[in-house]
Length: 209
Image (cartoon, rainbow, N blue to C red; front, side, top):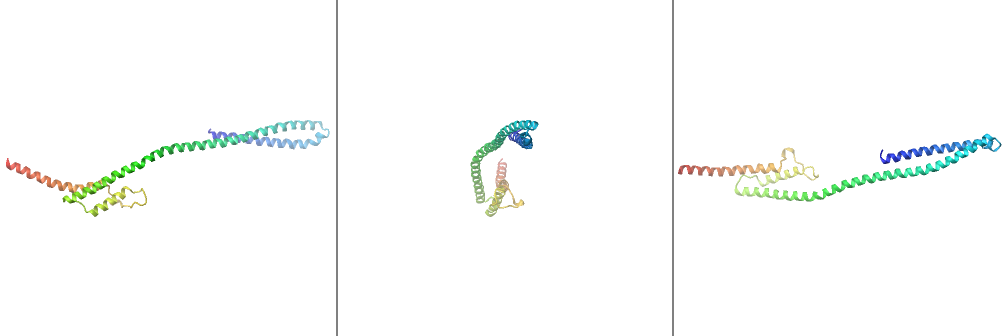
């Protein structure tokens, strides 16, 4: 049994006994009042009974006083047990909060580092696309690059806050998909030129041999 239930059970038992003793004293006094006239007018049995009832009433009064003090203490202990339980709950919450707060303190740096790496990679992607275009390699238009990168960013941030623009499922692409898709035409373009040069060199070597 937990401390609160135990304290409440003790309080309930004492309260029950106190009520019973008060009822017993009330009945005792009523009985004495009923016998008072006979006891005071020469009825020996009535006098003897009232004397017994008086002794019993005194004992009941002492018992009631003791039970009242005990019931008061029981109520205090119930309150103390509840307060102790509440403090324990608060301590447990505080212990969890301390762990969470320590973890939270590291989140900002992780986000900052991630965003810094993202910014560097994002800028590098744009730089690569511009360099490929200047070299004459196949590359999508600036407008197409911009809209697709924006959609990829919105898709990756989806659910973080209400300001993120929704992207239809068929228009959702990861940055990896976009970068790979844009790189392949340029890789093929470069391979055709370089492989063609290698073929000419091999032909020239055969002719010379």
